[in-house]
Image (cartoon, rainbow over all chains, first blue to last red; front, side, top):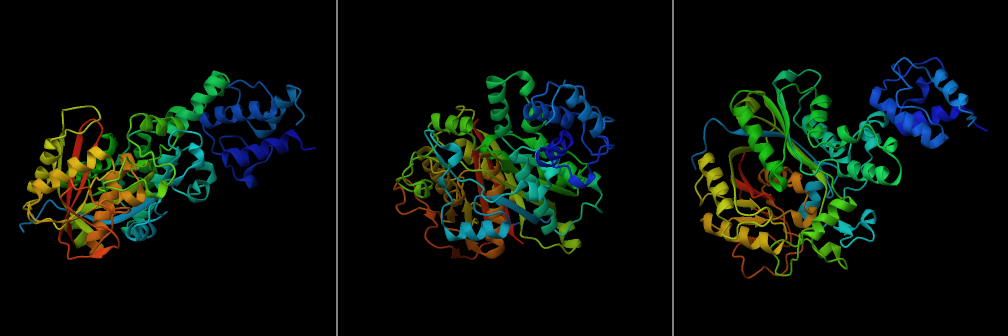
Length: 79
Length: 410
C-alpha cells in the first residue's frame, strides 16, 4: 500500500509535471516552482484523488511536502 | 514592377504546426501533395459534424515540458512550438537578442475553447470549487501573445488580433507597421487556433458553415469545386519572423519572400455573410496592391481564402477575376489543411512565401469540377512549377473583416 507521501509525489509528477528527483519531504512548493494558481490546482487534485477537503488557501509557497502529508493525514486519509 | 525600395519586410523564419505536419517542411510537402487531412474525429463523436483537420502526434508535454504544458490551452501550445521553429529558422537567438526591440502579434479568435468547455462542464457537474484557477489565464485569447513573449523574451508590443478568419493576416499587417515605424526590429507575427471542441464545432455546424460530408471527410474540403458544401474546421498555428527587408539582408539572413503590401477593409454589411458584391474584399485587395506599388496585372499567384463554402468561393472568385487583370494561378491550401480560422491568414501567408521561395504552386485538393460560376485558373492535381514574382494571400472573416497581403520573391 502506498503512503500519502508516495501518492502526493505521484500526483505532483504526473499531474503537474514536477521532476520526481526534486521532491523530498522538506522541500517547499516555492522551491518546486509552483505558484499560487498551481497550488490551488494541486489542492483541487488532492481533494479529487484522495477525498480530502483541503481549503484553497491551505497550501502556500513556504508549505513543505511533509506538512502537506500531515494536513492530509489529519483528515484521516492514509492513501 | 515598381517595388518600393523601402517599407518591405522580409520573412526570415517560418514555423508551422498544422494538420498537414508538425513543422514547416512536412506541412509544405503535404500541401503540395494535394491530399486532404480531413478525417473522422473521435473527439467530435456523436455530433452533427464529426470530422475535422486535427493536428495529430503533437506531444505538448515532450515539446514544452511537463511542468509547463498543463498550464497552457492547446492554441497556445501550438503557437509556442511554431514560434520556436520560426525563430530557430530565422537564425535568431532569444538568449542574446535585444528583447525590447522584439514584438509579438498573433491572431486568435475563439481563445481556449478546450479549457472553457472542460471547466464549464465541471461547474455544471461538480461544484464551483472544482473549477480550475487557471480557467481565465488559459482561456483568454490574448494569452497566446503573452506566452509567446515570455517564451522568447520579447519585450516590445505584444497583442492579439481578433478579426475572425482574417486575424492571422491582420497580425502580419500590423507587424509590418511596427517594423516600418521603427517601433520594433523583429516581430513574430502569425495566428493560432485550436477550437476543435464539441461546443465550438457544433456552433460552426449550426451556422451552416461546415461541410456535412460525413461519409467521406477526405473529400469534404473542396475549394472552388462545384460540389463544395462548406468548410472543414481545422486547428493549427503559423508564425513568421519578420524583419525590415534591408535589416535582414544586412545581417545575411535567408529570406523566403518579402511582404510588400497590405490592405484591410470592412464590409459593413452583415455579421457573418460576406457582401455578395465583394466590394469590401475588392477594397482590401486594391489597397494592398497600391500599397505594394504593384499593378493589378502583375500578380502571378493567389493563395485564396477559398474556404469551400458555396458563398465565399463564388464571391471571392468574382473579385479576383474583376481586379486581377492577368490570370494568376490561384490555389486554396484549405483543401488540404482545412480552415484553421484565426490561424488561416498566417498559415496561408507562410504557404505563399514558400510558393515564392520554391517557385511552386500547391494544388487545390479535391478540385475535380470547377464551379462554372468561378472564372479563375485554379491549380489542381499536382503542384505546378511556375515563374512567380508577386503573390497575394487573401483572408476574410466573420464580422466583415477583409485583409490582403502582397508578397514578392526575395
